[in-house]
Image (tube, rainbow, N blue to C red; front, side, top):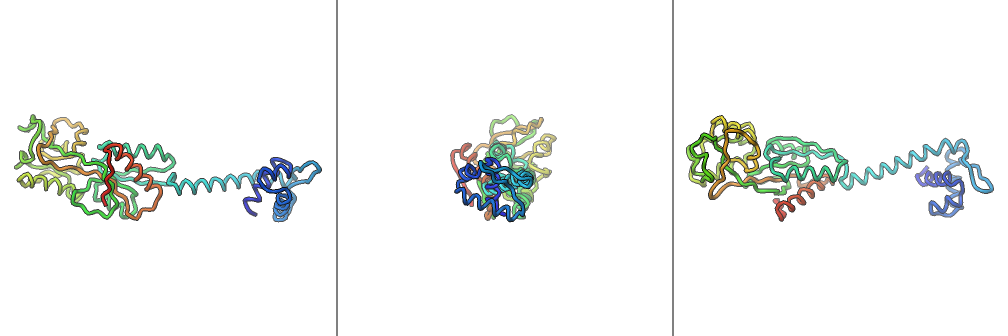
Length: 305
């Protein structure tokens, strides 16, 4: 039994006339009659009573009709499901992000635009440090990750550069320099630095250290922060100073002051990383959405291989 047999049967059942049904399905009346007869022979029961002016369903035909309609409906649903999957319009997407990434407006903009455009895709979001995100991406536990790589990092992933956020100095409000409008980095020489652990993002960590060295001093590492979003809270209680992406100023912590860096300043790169051999249409759609949003926000497209 083939799907075309079911379509022919349903057409005759709806029209109760072989000639009209033949026109409806686009074949001749004799071939249609032969197809229905083949179907009846396979089932082992007559589905229609042939009348002089048309046809009527037999008891077997009436029982067969709703089942045939359900099978065709399920077949169409299966076809549409396959088409949606092939186009990346369904399925699941697992996205990771660093704690600081979501403070850049391009990240929520990408996620929200993707959810609106591909509402049938199940979207999962997870937060972790850059190192863990890259490990989970390589292990196929995540499909795409928003990370803060260092300028010297050589990543195995396919990376789409989304933004380069300026860095700012963070001081406690009672610090003697907290009233300054701008500061050179060398003003922090001799201060105790509050930074996130290097293993959470070695490249980004090293960029901060390198910037201090270019300014002529070796930063003194003090109290480590569990993650970058905790730095301001530790500085507020007087545990040191730091350098963070300017987007972190959105964390409104009483007792700290954010100050622009005068002269050469490090930048915090925000990147979307995916596997180089990724073939999922859903992931490719997410990458395309990220590129579109990045173009809209910066007016250019930068792909770091």
